[in-house]
Length: 329
Image (cartoon, rainbow, N blue to C red; front, side, top):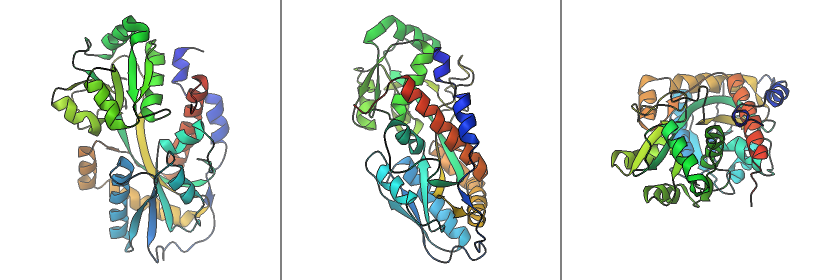
């Protein structure tokens, strides 16, 4: 298989999955009265994470606009399977929601889970994406993606990249990138994002792909060098750092996305009410500016848009994981 094929999404797989209808219920629920009590927003990650901050902002905005409390409930653990499984098994009445991220589809593509990322959920709407950035130590003799690729190819088997762990986004994104660049870097799992970043700062590992907000302080202090961003647009926090797409790999887009789900079969009228309220809230200029300053790019749309993203991303990462023989061990 050509290296470029590892980045492209599998047309056949996506066509099959897109043929399935989203898990919406056509029940004539009384959306006008919804919500009549407190709504839980499950976050399958710890407090302080990107998903948690988005969930709390969503909860505040939905509470303000719909007149009832939307309360965040953190249920981290087991690669997000604990909280995600809990949300998937909740009653589909609109009173248990979940903020999901790229890992919502990556984990089931990587190991057996008690839920299906497509069939077990009702997509309500995407909220934002978080571009990642490729960073290297300051003594790396490269200032753009072409120079970095040439340097890593010269290093051969001595080249390495860090990640928090196996099948994390840093691991998978770098797998796609190095297949495109034709490099052969060793994967160095560090057991956490902080230690992985420090491995690069200290020069024991060549690079990492990490969230903009996580590495920006090191970039500004001169401890890390930013090579390129992985999304289709430049993050507001790093306006002078080009994207990979701009740097010679057209169509390259690996951004961490985040959105709101419910369990399968949430009534369509409730889905539509939540989607409209969510879109209105996150397209507010003040809210948009605040999130951009935190490293996010607002991307809202319809429930169908989010359903297509979920399906295509699940197919994409299954292909990458299977093609590159990535396993839990």
